[in-house]
Length: 239
Figure 1 (cartoon, one colour):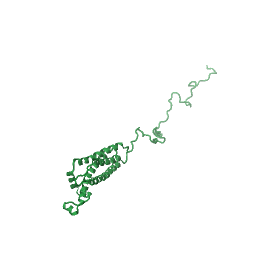
Figure 2 (cartoon, rainbow, N blue to C red):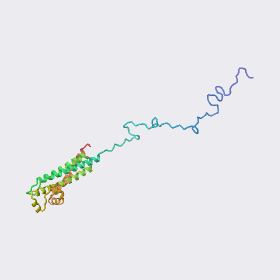
Figure 3 (cartoon, rainbow, N blue to C red):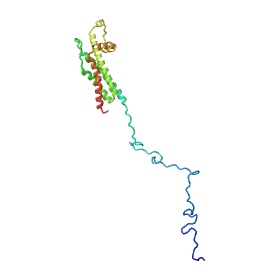
Figure 4 (cartoon, one colour):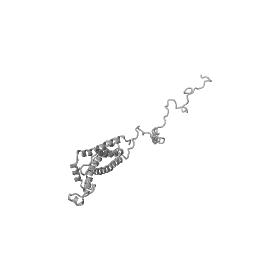
């Protein structure tokens, strides 16, 4: 017989809440899972990655910083290199023309009509080559193509200087004759340029027959001097 002071015990024991309470699911039932996205539930867009900015854009790189990947950008190509080479060759051509004309006139003025010899100065060939090489080395340093072009220009300038000197000598000698006397020997009174351009083959043949070893040395000393001076000046240039 039960005692009157004993209260009937609730099922579940002390501290247990009846089924359906607000503190958890009933005993023996698994906890409810949150609804998974599927039909009827919109997909959530993924958030921005750390490599992107707040609005999905890639972050801006600071000025001067290398691009992503760790490799700095290549240096911009140097402009005007081809123009410098062309300018150097044009300057060498102009200098070569002036020098071969000056050489021809100077040699013709120093010609000795009695002995039929004219002075031969080795330093003249060196000076022609050096001045041409100086222009090439200054305007197109460390460019072997320009060096080679300067050497060719020096060779042609020295060779034309020798021929122009002979043309000037012939023009002076024929100019001292009258027109009838010149016609009797089959010569026509012309300027030095007239002989060099109009009778180039005859002038070259006469020079070749009268040329000595030193004349050929002059022709080949000039390009060597141009090449050496251009190399030295180009190596010492800061351009």
